[in-house]
Every structure is written in structure tokens, then in C-alpha cells.
Length: 160
Image 1 (tube, rainbow, N blue to C red):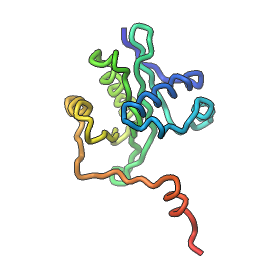
Image 2 (image 1 turned 30 degrees about the horizontal axis):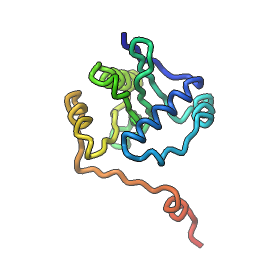
Image 3 (image 1 turned 135 degrees about the vertical axis):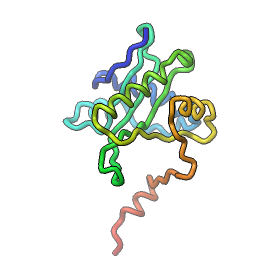
């Protein structure tokens, strides 16, 4: 039986294990810098920076979806940004990923959000096909921009 549930601060270790598994799958295991204590503290905060769902199949935790709110100036409404979606390889093709996406979409609708968005790596054809089957548009004309670490420090330094 498949169940989708919201996480609590006590799920921080489980969330971290999925973050690490996703980073490994995306060929960037060294990129994970967060720890369980940070995740736990963030989930305990009055306004957590993210929400997370866990998928449990026959009592075993097999996947997660981590998301937060965005905002569309064009629509004048909040949106939902899916930061991470991951299902253990052994649980794939059992409807887990689709169930997680449907639950996040349901949350977006309940909150009157204009959009539900995420990124997918261009080499991940399996995921792209899966998302398209669920009705997602893969927007090839948009490119993700990121400033982090030293570049963020440099850009964020006031000019003298």
C-alpha cells in the first residue's frame, strides 16, 4: 500500500538520506553540504524554508518530494517550486513518483497557486518522458541561472 505523508522534524535523517541519494544519481555526491541537524532546525522553525513529503510503500520509505513557494509577477500569485523528487530505484514503476507529484499539485491547487514548476537535467530522458506523460511542459527555451559560493560573494559585495 502506498501512502504519502508530510514530514516532521524527526524525519530529518530520512530527508538527508534521500538528498544524498539524489545527488549520487545526478552525479554530484560531493555537492551535498547540508546535515540532518540543519534540516531538523529548519523544519522546527516558525516559517520553515521548505516542505517535504515522504512516500511509504508497504511500510518502507521509498521516495520524497521537497518543495517551497515561489511567486509569479505575471500571474500575481504564489507558485510551488519542486526542488527535489527522488524515488529509490527498487520502488520505481510502482506509481510512487506520480503519487508524489500529484500530492504536490494538489497542495498547489488547495493554496490557489498559479504554477507548479521544477527543473530536470537534460540527460535524464527517462524523467523527461515521465513528466511529459503527466502533462508537464518541458520549456527548452528557458535556462537556469545560478550564482553561488565565490561568485555570490563577489556579486553581493557592495561597490566601493
